[in-house]
Length: 168
Image (cartoon, rainbow, N blue to C red; front, side, top):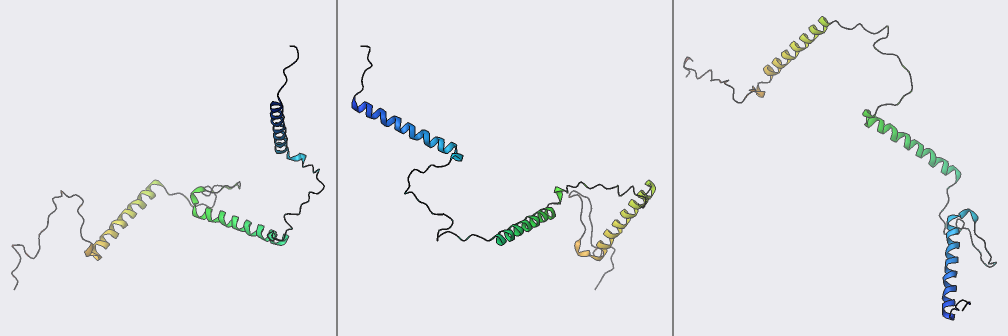
């Protein structure tokens, strides 16, 4: 028995179909992985027409229309950037410009001394107190606010006090 076993006709046919499918799959894989190879047409009756020149194809835009559309999109992009810069000032500005310090320039006003700053703070406190008093005087409908609910602040009617003169 040195001769190999022979296959039946059905086994040989099945084996041939499997190898044919494997060969077709290999060709498809090569075509998919290497599109630069191109397609070889062996059928002389195979014809095609241009996809873009067919009657049902959408109208193509002219070069002028494409350039105009490009310019409009560029304008819209720049307007969007300006809107984002305006609405989000916390983002900041990226700049490579150089500048000098505003406060160290020769024409900058002199800084206040500590005494002048203290005097200015006292004057501002006095003016805010005067403003509060003026509001209290001109708007009695606002009323008086008590800072603590357990406050001992009390009041009585001036006209109903025991020492008030009798009115008719």
